[in-house]
Amino acid sequence: MNKDSASFCISIDLELAWGVSDKLNEFYLNHAINSERLICNQLIEIFDNYKIPVSWATVSALLDENNRNISIEDKKAWYAPDIIDKILTSKIDHLVASHSYAHLNFKLSTKKEIENDFEKSNFFFNKFGIKTNSLVFPRNQVHHIDILDKFNYKFYRSIDKSWYKKVSKFNNFAGKISNIIDKTIPIKSNTIKPILDNNNLIEVPSSLLLISRNGLKNIITNASMYRKIRLGIDEAIKKKECFHLWFHPSNFYTNSKKQFLLLNKVLKYVSDKREVGQLKVIKLNEFNV
Picture 1 (cartoon, rainbow, N blue to C red):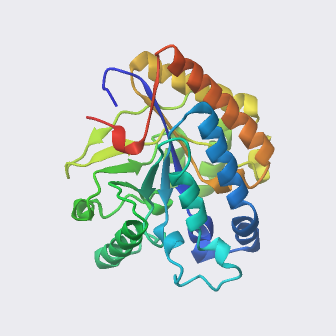
Picture 2 (picture 1 turned 90 degrees about the horizontal axis):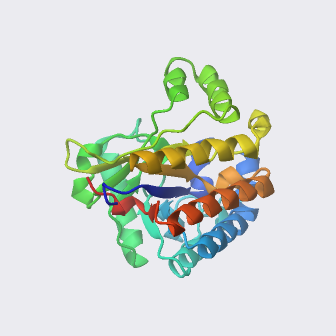
């Protein structure tokens, strides 16, 4: 990322059932088995159509055919080299970043447990021919930063600084309601700049989660979400900063058509701005400070 130009970035947390392995339920398990591949295929096709490279933060246990959860229900929920192969062989040069090996709870894990996880993660990425220097923390739990350099990570995603995040710190339920209000009333999203942290690593905050549409969140309209995202992109252009959108494929499990219509509209706007030279599309490992 040139510090004198505006940019747009997408990072996707690819984890299938590993993302909810500590609180597994039938909804997520069934969708991980039956929906995730269709969603990923459609995402890859859309990115191909608009020529948008993205960063796929991948749980590397998805490359381990002998992982500890392989026998739970259906291995397609836990093992997905086919998805990663489609990402790597698509028309666009996407980034495969690390989302750890087993999606551990970093807040509750010791440094040694995290080191063991990173070692396994690197092993399976290397086995699949993937070299990555970028990390997205599981559950966005930014912890144990001091060991990242040991495993050759130079870039990592951190959480956005939205107002509802501050509410969540005091009351989780109030934070959830605030999140819905934030998306329903198209308050301008944060733009971001990369940060050189105290460990000489590049921290890349996010701007906005492309929120799922299950439960109460379905009251959020595409019009309000699109306006919120568009305002954020316009602000990034004005300030010569970055608008960083992120999501999981699982955010498309419910009301998939509605979600894909929104994403298409956003990428069309990004593509138009790129076409006239106002915006660059970059990956997590392309930020400069």
